Length: 531
Image (tube, rainbow, N blue to C red; front, side, top):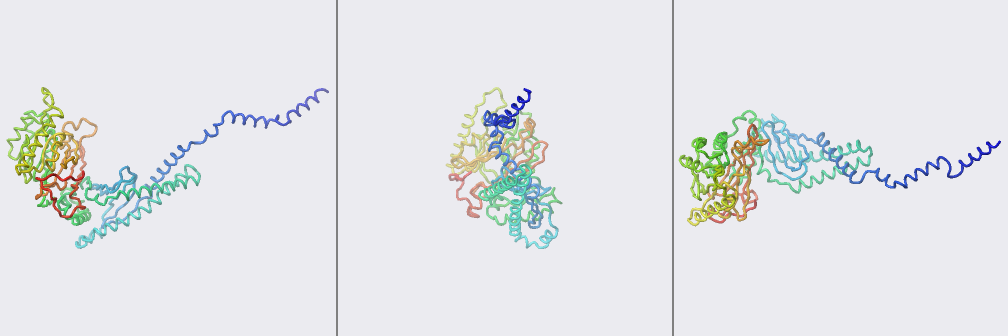
């Protein structure tokens, strides 16, 4: 009798407001929310994380779009080509002519590179040029128009490819149309910014300083020398077009590329340095002398490695090169080495500022004051090099006062060469095993050569062998001023790569008055042109 009323009361109490199971659970959720107010916010990704993820999706999607559908097939003159834009940190243009090699141009600075692959030569168009050589005169304009049309088509296709790729990947990752459209819009904005950057940094003169690789490393010889490029730029462009049309012939005669035809108004100097007892260097030097019909060879030292009398026989091939060989002592060359070379008929050893006219140019040089293989003596260091440079500069001033100004000074160490600034138009050096050019404060151009011996035995000390480097310097026969130079870089021990890059002296670029010979003579103050 008592249990029934108690049970009914208990049910009423549980049904009262705030005492039901649902209310109890709701209070528990609110209590947890009050105890952890940042829990819901922490579950959401931070804005910078979302932005980073969206950027990654845009870049990957844009790259995939360019890779899949961003190519354009375009006829350029007698060739069928494929043009494409590719991500790049340095920009520029690369023209691949397989299997002959590639041509690289510093045409622009942007995060995209223009790749042009020459797929094949169209036989009917090529045969028409062979049958009607007069059409070559208009080939330059035809090629320019074809490239412009191909580039416009490529720009439109690239926009579609970039937007499509980024949008598709955004939709696959986020599964939200708004995010996908945002990815596509951002990709288009990035491509537009890259295009504006490329347009702002466009360098139409980049064709003047191309870098050739593979078998095309002989292209500067085919095209012509620096003098003709400076004074006859239109002829140079026509010859480039002619080279393009002769690709089919090069396929058949790759072992006998067209011979170099030097301009009679140009003197050609082969600059070598730091051979370091590499016997392969003599074959390379002999080949360059023959291919470029070199007038004079300049060796800025370190021909030997230890400078012992037992090494002197290594120098005998110099007598068979057939051209004068101007030499200065390096820090690995001994007095015994110098005496041995002085007895060779075609060698002109320069030391203590001595000047001699060789091959139409006047040279002066000084040997390195240090002989580092001799451990019994304390090296003089940089102070001794600067002292030697001062002696060379003093000799240059004396030569100018005597009415016999020097055209080219030679030292082994760059620190010694820099002391001649303002006393000579050009100074050559080596020692550091890498090439480079620097305009000094008072107008002297310093040209440093790499190792023509690939660093000698040191080539095997590192993971990758050192390259073999040399330069062909082009001088005007009348003014004796440097017009341009070809920097030659060959793959080191066990490698078969080759690259030739042409550089024009700033005063000789087409922006200067065509055909004008520099007015400054070697006897005057060197010109202060920009580096």
